[in-house]
Length: 116
Image 1 (cartoon, rainbow, N blue to C red):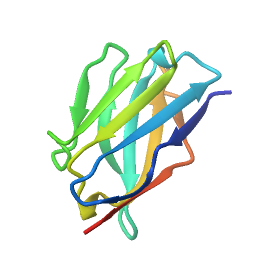
Image 2 (image 1 turned 180 degrees about the vertical axis):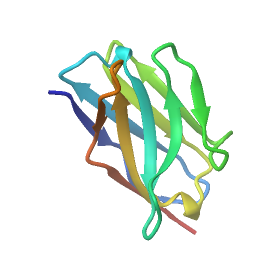
Image 3 (image 1 turned 90 degrees about the horizontal axis):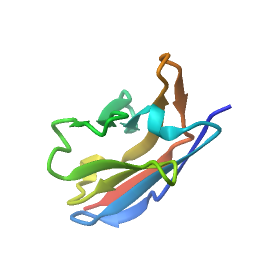
Image 4 (image 1 turned 45 degrees about the vertical axis):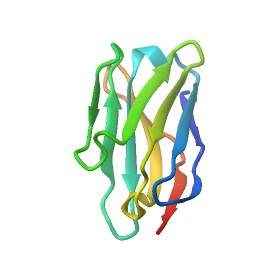
């Protein structure tokens, strides 16, 4: 059973930074495509960033140049470094891992609140 546990959320002022972590257990993270999603109140969940098993990355236009997704396979952990945060980045952030056979796993989410 794969488990993903996010951490690192919190309250930060606009312009500040946070680093989210997603620790995996029960499987080898390096074999997975890892994604970070977010869901703001009253809005649909949106894909923020993706990193492939080979290390290729993609970002939503709204976070390009501010957010960086990475992975440390030795620690079985994925990260989302968020800089220059804006109030509109306020959301619950979810870690998602997709296996080679398209099985999707989700973390429980971590709240990020950016004050103006």
